[in-house]
Image (cartoon, rainbow, N blue to C red; front, side, top):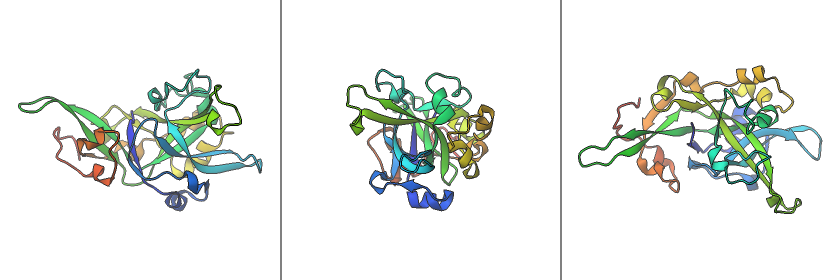
Length: 247
């Protein structure tokens, strides 16, 4: 799975990498070295512009943890931060989004944990690892809009926009840490992945890849990242690996 990630790339840097798209500076999120479930996340997506009637690509904030449009409430969002890419087009919670509402979430990398057994004078603990390709990972995602019937429809608070990250079986270096990892979209495939008119499931599955073919860099980092409230670039500093599985 992907339960925390790092997102520090600015919209301007993304334009240099991916080409032109729109964004609202008032909605631009601050860099985060510890993005956690239910946090706002930056997502690149395409929707029809209400004013022009044309398909427009934009970077906008979504809440991490997908809430299906048919949900009675938003309480289950923290449980739907990931979707298995192999079956997302079939599962009730994700299939409508897979067909029409796809996005990418830019990330510098993500965290996974391994349990370290108790030893003399030391309690058992979870050792975090940072996995990265060294560049921007365009993690494949799905997004949804959920309507809060308790709020008047004209109130912006009536609508909640949420997202999840697609994953698949991990291989190579990533598989040493966790058996699942996020899938990514190549920059040249963005047009097909984001286009809501593209619905061929086989074609969409073809666009999903493992970051660096699964051969990502793995390093042990401070357990400070285990606390959701901590943030800052120091969280990525390498520490001694108690399990000896880092690169």
